[in-house]
Image (cartoon, rainbow, N blue to C red):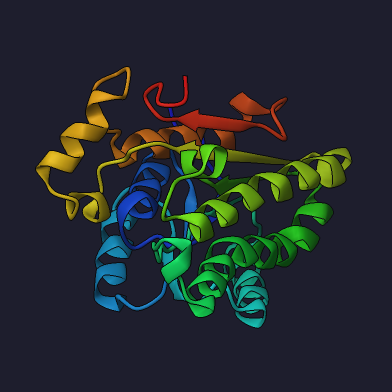
Length: 248
């Protein structure tokens, strides 16, 4: 059963990791997809071609969600190209980890800009279209770190906690127009980024997770399918921890 048949989704940071999995799974569920990438145009082209084989329209856009003007331009282009914006997934994010005493102002500002300001930029960019349609689902990617904090990640934790506050505010602001806003807080997900940690670190993380394993990017993507589809039509303003029980 295709749960997103006929819907158009914008997915930021769609060329690798969780974003790439969301593009692939959304295509299988019948969504037409506009996804963004920052630098890897070749990888984006491959994903575009592969996902299109599902019989849906898929287009990659080189666009920086942390740039206000680029976000506005992207939304306008997607409406022109696809005719609607039904789902927005704010997935673009970076880390610049360090203890506070060693963290530069630039590293703090950049993480806030890419992770949090981008959510403001993109939500504002799609708002007009969704208000006209009187429907929409906005899914913002936070993290368990945004819920519980972590040493050496104050910038990242602040950005991801900020996403939660912003989303809850939007749920209240936009709810009367049937625009839903929810947060996914992934736990320890096995991606190219986590693979760099080494086997011992990965095993340590897994040992404290009740399900005793890291999550797959597809498991986050499946949660996005649920929140983007009509199955979740009465859910807004919520934080869904997808973490194998890490925060239990």
